[in-house]
Length: 151
Image 1 (cartoon, helix red, strand yellow):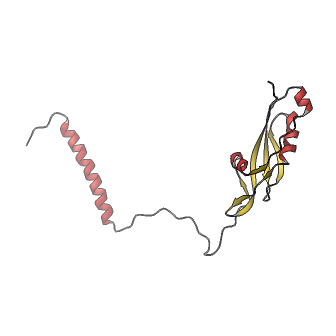
Image 2 (spheres, rainbow, N blue to C red; image 1 turned 120 degrees about the vertical axis):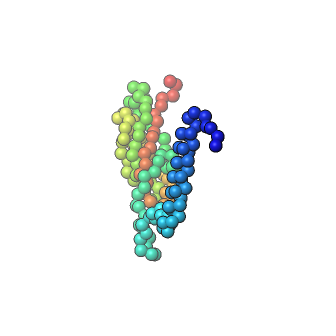
Image 3 (cartoon, rainbow, N blue to C red; image 1 turned 60 degrees about the vertical axis):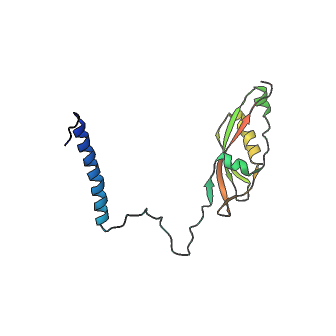
């Protein structure tokens, strides 16, 4: 038998215990006779029955920008222009299945600019958003920037 350097014996014992645990667990699993459990599958409806599609989906501004067919820029309100008011107006918008802006409400923005933003957004037109090949309403947010030139 060879002599071990001080402290090496403890390392070998720990390594041996770790190996025993690994082999012991694999042997135990092999003897159990049970198959490993698979991930739970999602609940299925009755065969031949499809889940109903949602009538409205929430989509990011970037996704709806790709569907934009007609964008009408807002007219700068005269009073806001005279007072040199600038800023961004955020709107919450519902786009119909046909791609028309059906509902508009203000999320934030300078009150001097919001009416012009709403008026412009109501004239925007989108391609219908398709979900599994069927058009659905879209809920999204629009950002309209009002910037004075020459600043």
